[in-house]
Image (cartoon, one colour):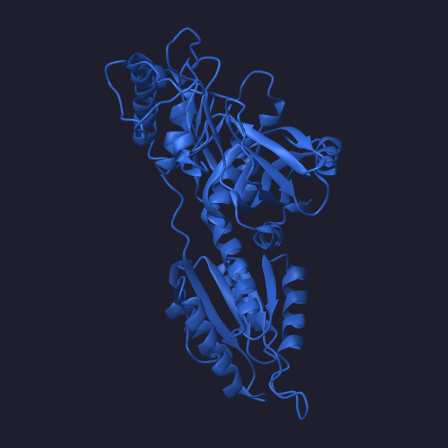
Length: 440
């Protein structure tokens, strides 16, 4: 079972008739038009000014809690009960949106900012998940901020109901891959379905192959892989794909070694991990369940396919971290023509494409979840170290300081790289979920 598609946004404006309801209604129209460009929007097109209107709106527009996040626009100073009623009735993340005054030279027409202050106090005091945005919904910066808040709320909603397939367990001695199954379920609504590694072994048949997404298989020495090696890689691809498909899951943590890694075979399972990422599955090697959740979160908030990574070195002059790992998706390659394969059919080498990126991790410490976000940029610098890799420039502090922070605070040794600056989304996700965030 996949997590439900979380893309329906509720929009509701509240206020009192003692203020400029007509002005609030115009702001509501602008907001609805903007949100409608990206999401299905449900909600009344008038400002709600009394309890009867509110109850009718809940019944008509939000039956069976059919929205995943609510943008609650404080059109004017509202009835203070309305935000709490909505929070209790819908039980979904609420993004409060306060509006600027249209004419501060002559009057306070809306008193929306004060209204959102009243609302944030009430929601904070009662423990309801919420965030807030202030500003004119026609302003591009406000639209970008509102978009980030909605995306974070939808990501949290999408996690609830997610089933992760766990093939095997975490790799031996990889204690940084330890997970708390009940905490995942309680805090994020994520559950696990266990899949025996024997299913992959039973599915493997050298004569049953799934075609790899490559026309050529060049080695670093510029010669081609033998057909036998390619056939074995494609047999692993077919086996894993069959197990994934039969499970009905989208996200996996895979114990890909030592049981599934035959060092005497002419080809291995590792290239298939990257191919499956480009097929639309999300996975974390070495049985790292929390990393699999991180990959899913990164996919929801960022651009393209996420990259599962170790940090194996840093460069002081570049202020850059060396990120590398097996199982990278070929779509991440800066130059697909430069993808190279190891002679043993295990290693796949390429350099990730340059661009703005974020390094993130959902981790655990002291029996609590925590989030990490590192503002970054993938440099246009070749990596030739027998894996997919990138030099990732840290933007907020020197790369060496980032590494020392990670080590001092005992962060897990697997991270996720995703293209795009998603730090705002991570901050909002942190507030909505109650999971602390460290930004480096």
